[in-house]
Figure: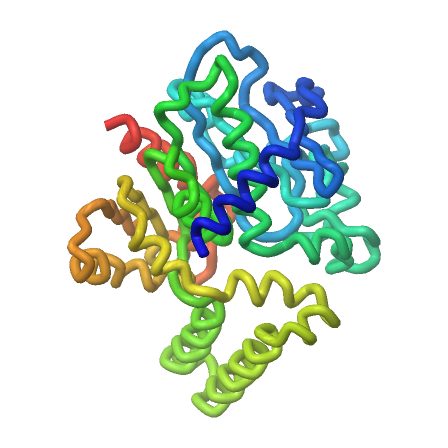
Length: 339
């Protein structure tokens, strides 16, 4: 099965050609576009000059069709996936790469996005995602697209092909695991806010935790868990997914990636906040690595931080009045890759 996937990926990669390369206006990023008859893959490199040979660091962003750049009313342009990072520190040793979400424009005005900064087709409806995006929103597609981009980049004169770092946050961490499992050129893997288990189990654990803390009754927890199990059954039904495209992602990303993770032999770095319920299972990962006689895991739990590495106050609420700790978290990972 794995060989068949690799052969299919190779045939897909061979059909793509570079369609464009230009600087993103108002930024220090270069926009590349790979295209064939079936798909267009947009990605950016956090550089405008390619005179220095460096390895690639690919960052896989999380879920939702969030554009790579958001233009605000005052003309300010935000790099959405990398806006919280110390990109200059990352660029010292790497060409930093981010791939656009499928069927999502690279640059979008803020007024065309919903409250979560996702691109929508109708601004009067917060979840009016395009059908093309919904049908493309599954793990295998993201993994294939990423490996197509990496294949192209590693042929460029300004890229050191002997080192390749892949990283991801939240849903992007699942994609990063999938990329690494298939791409033997990857030399380091970084995962942030990673849940190695079934995505549904996070919601079931959340209901239990809420009941334990007295936020809801145990009867309410039972009801929530039963709903999640029923929804999981529906999302695993092919006919249901065809009828309701939004279930595509639920079907794909509800699968555990633990087995894939344990098959990876290169150094793995995982960072997560102690208050991030999605990443709770990471506490148990060392047991799995020991059982499989593997010692390639570095685990870093950050106390009192949430899924996006913002501090959590005494009421259990994320404090977004601060800039958070993404820079420190990512820089620690970057420094680890250089050891």
